Length: 156
Picture 1: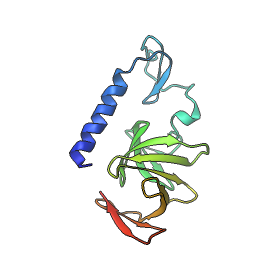
Picture 2: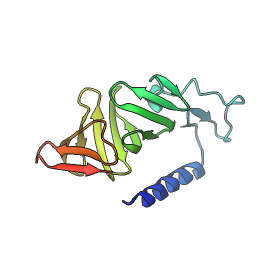
Picture 3: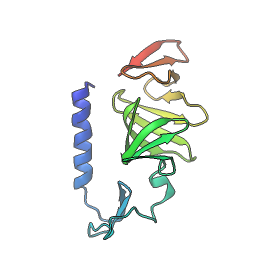
């Protein structure tokens, strides 16, 4: 998808998410909203959010929503479940069963991939049905190699 289309898709997702009825408590940007769309009076982060609701919240805070993961790098989780990663761009996050177990929808790649702290920078690409290796610190374009075919490829 071209970058402009990616921005439009992200905007549409954010708008639709904002317009959805809140018939039960939800977590959004770290705040709990009740059935009447009321946030806490002081708009403080929710203390009762489940740990899985914001899996990056325990990472060192660099300020303004930026956090640093020792294995995944620098990211901003201010729009969780969307995060912005300095190298990967916009990613939609689905937290897996374990603490460092994630599925990511990569908006620039147009692909779902799976990663854990134990195997990263190797990731499983759903569209390729294969493990791929990410050459860290490459961005614009990011460089990968498909570990099954040996094919090198780039993703913006």
